[in-house]
Image 1: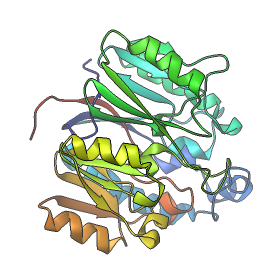
Image 2 (image 1 turned 30 degrees about the horizontal axis):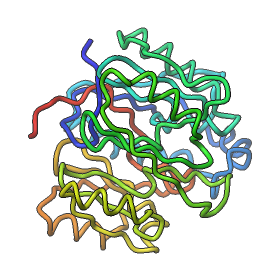
Image 3 (image 1 turned 45 degrees about the horizontal axis):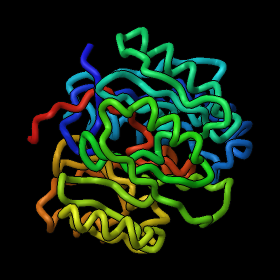
Amino acid sequence: MKYGSQSMVNKVDSILIKHPRDAFISQEHLNQNWQSYKYEGCPDFDNAVQEFTEFERIICQWVPVVHYLPLNQSIGIDSIYTHDTVKVTNHGAIYFPMGKTLRKPETLATQLYLEKIGVKTLGHIEGKGKMEGGDIVWLDEQTVAIGLGYRTNEEGIRQFRELTKNFIKEIIVVPLPHADGPDACLHLMSLISMVHQNLAVVYLKYMPVFFKNIMENRGISLINVSDEEYDRLGSNVLALAPGKCVMLQGNSEIQNKLEKAGLEIYPYPGSDLSIKGTGGPTCLTQPIFRTSEMD
């Protein structure tokens, strides 16, 4: 089993997703749970399944091996967002304690599945450490930016640094703003999506100046998303290969900018699959193995 995804843009060879049937379960289940998970509205189950079918079609078009996290009665509706519980490095998986209490059982469920298919466990963020996968952005295989905010703390970053000290050269800590408060799901990946080695979609309003300068000094061009499209998860873009990206339908301004820059964009409908739970295409996916090929 090949694993390792120390990149945001290299070609995805294998990936982990979860079907709404196994996360949302039913309309009745959603009706009973969406408010406790702080969704912006109750998803329509049938429509979410239809939207997932289109999203899944795009994923399967580009990714040779697609794994599905199975139904597990101990975890809830947020488990459809497979990204936050783990990061799969070239040396094994690092598992994270989830900031939202209702999501904490997801970590073990993900670990049991990944170990079953052959992904080695490198370690865990434990004790007083806090970290979620959405706060980790690889700039290259040996450089990682980590958001410091309500979901990831300094102790979590210290533990991550210790676990990766033999293969990561640089960790850039990026303080995140208060924004909409501790209950909002603001991650570093809410502000930045790498779409090519030298191109990123960003929300500059929330980006610290020093980090913007670091990105530009590394030769990375930044395409800013508007306030309106940020609210529609327009800054959440998944690269399945360099310049080949999945994003939410309805963000025509940023989509046009990316297409003008020469990228291939594959939009999917996500009003119930993504918008109401504030989880875009990067949140819906956990790349297990990205190749080192550039196309």
